[in-house]
Length: 148
Image 1 (cartoon, rainbow, N blue to C red):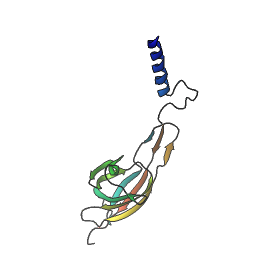
Image 2: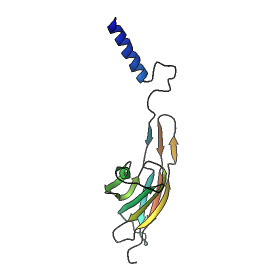
Image 3: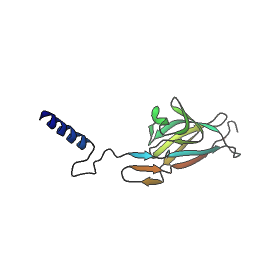
Image 4: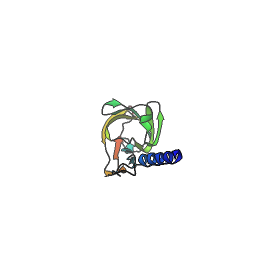
């Protein structure tokens, strides 16, 4: 009899943990949101003559005025390498998965570093549970040569 009660108890607990067996079947587990691509894509960086730069350094990153540092810098990124509190971007590169107002400084060897502000957001949201975001903001910039 004890074995039957234990089996019934374990079955009930397992069923409840999976979200089934109750009157509210909408509680089937955690709702997951997936960013299908980064929220900010740096498509190109050129100089005054329109020549494309292959690699840029991204530093002094902020989100809504708050510094972004450490692992958060490279989370969700593509074609980037973290170097302390800055990133090396092999163009094009993607950054971040959290929408918001980002500030950052772009620089490259032989060029004057320049600070930019970008309101990065997704163009597409497929709602429900689970949900996805895609179509991040595309950004291009121009840097001036040092001493020009």
